[in-house]
Image (tube, rainbow, N blue to C red):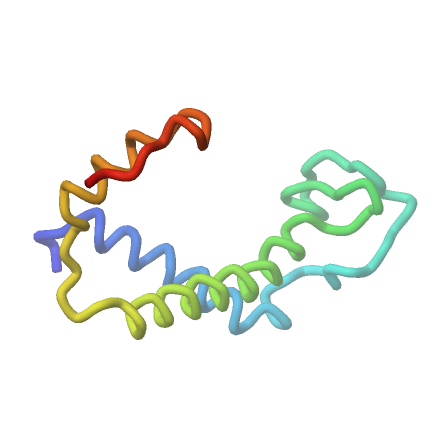
Length: 114
């Protein structure tokens, strides 16, 4: 596990995000949708560690609750890509890359290869 320190760091970040997302109701200090006009655009403080937005909503709470959506989209997209990926993921042939690179100008300048 220590042979891949960047992999361990990435796994730790994902694990912390997942734990915060799962326990967002208990971890977030405020309701992410609660509007407080008295503290609009507040700077970071002890009450609001990341400050508040233009509607007075706590940014830290919104980040914690937003982790749910970010992780769901990330895991669903990567799992669907792994599911529908070809069994042998080989790069496309060079001829396909060369024939498409000739067509970068106007559509009339692209002639089919014979």
